[in-house]
Amino acid sequence: MNIVKGLFLGSAAALLAVGGAQAADLPLKAKAVEYVKVCSIYGAGFYYIPGTDTCIKLGGYLRADITLNGGGAYNAPAWNSNAGQQNRLANDMVFRSRQDLNIDTRTATEYGVVRTYFDATFSWTSGGPIAGSDANTGVGVYYAFIQFAGFTFGKAVSQFDTPWTGYPGNNTSFLLGGYDDVTGINQVSYTAEFGNGVSASISLEDPSSYLQSNLYNTSTASAAGFASGLTGASTLNAAGMYGFNSYAGVQVPDIVGKVRVDQAWGLFQVSAAAHQVRASYYTPTLETSGHPSDTWGYAVQGALSLKNLPTGPGDSINITATYSNGATRYVLGGVTGNSFSMFGNGSVPGTFQSIAFASAADGVFAGSSYLNGGGIEKTSAWGVRGAFNHNWNPNWSTSVFGAYTKLDYNGTATNLICGNGSGFGFTNVAPGGGYSCNPDFAIAQVGTVTRWTPVKNLTFSGEVMYTYLDQNFSGTATIAPGGTKPATVYEFKDQGTWSGNLRVQRNF
Image (cartoon, rainbow, N blue to C red; front, side):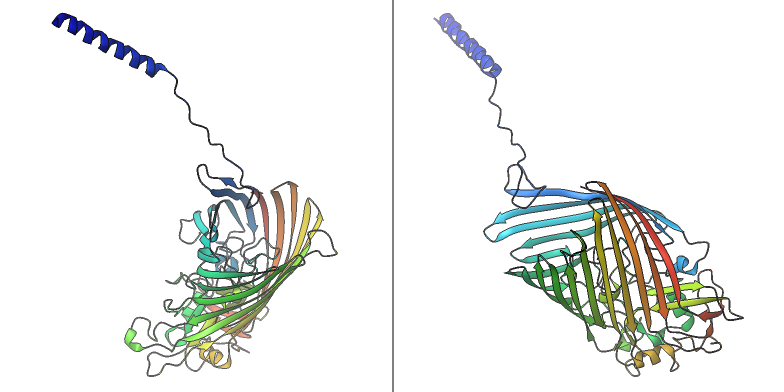
């Protein structure tokens, strides 16, 4: 009986094993393939992320170009440092290769669309270092923000700025005369849409990276040191600026507002910003020395874009006009340096060369302690910038652009810089014949760029621009400019410079 039972159990186990093997050999039903679906809700190029209701778009560009007769900063005019000095250390050409990548996501919710946007650049530049990197390579985060229910959180174009930022029709990043934060600025903002193209925005924006100009304490600066810093010979200070910057840390973000009207004919916009001007200490290394009272600067801007011009389809005119008081960066642009110095041939016998220099500041004050210190004297600036963009045909286009920028120190600020025993001006460095001190200056720029697009999204362009520095010092003086320039007698004289750019860019 036990033998029969064993045979039965063994046979059953064998049958189960065979059945299991046969079941394992049967083909399994494959899961359905999730193909990437086009998301047409938000325009061309968007696709649904598989398994989600989020749409994504990848884009960017690859650019290769060369700047001719530019400055130390890529595609800047030769208006400071070795390029401004026109010495043998300057590079007559600067090459750059850049890859830009951006990621745009959109998700429809009961509160509206949730959007994220990220844009980064990877660059290799010869002839000039990029801040925060080694001498050639650089990675930049231009934009990184979230938009939800009308709010924007993160690094985005300032609400003060225009849709074309610092590029009404130019390639160069150094067209002055207005605001420019093409690389984005950290902010918390809210935009209300009223319909018919009318919108309004209010924003709190971080001024530390792009919106603080110099703040001079004339009592702690020497004339020789000022000349050295002004002409770009000194190293950058802790704030990343040349010269003597006495700005304190950020206490209050800039408060920005705008009203915009977008129509088929173009755009009209009015922007305003409040900017805190806050000094460190009268004696920079001693907090018991006290500090000037905080004050507020401001800036206002009007912008106009005209389309549907009689000159041809796609033609446009973009123009801005900006005024500031104690908020210089809203006129000189966030990526531009604060100091300018250009050398040329002298016309006065006995002088080594001529020099034109200028320095932008939000304000000036003096004092070594709260016992003798004074308040902040704010500067004022204004500028206009614009371009006319014309399409010759679908493959060729030309832009003509220009800008004018003027910065004024008030009477008290001028006296603090130029004399009154401060040692900040050139009165203590052997002024020569006909010398007069006036830190006010103006910069005029005009240029043109022509673009050829042989196939869609591939563009070749060539640009040329002339920059003229109109400074208000006059006569001659003995100066120690630093760099390769000797300490000797120079003539104060306005200077101009040409710069050019050749570019190839493929968008995708």
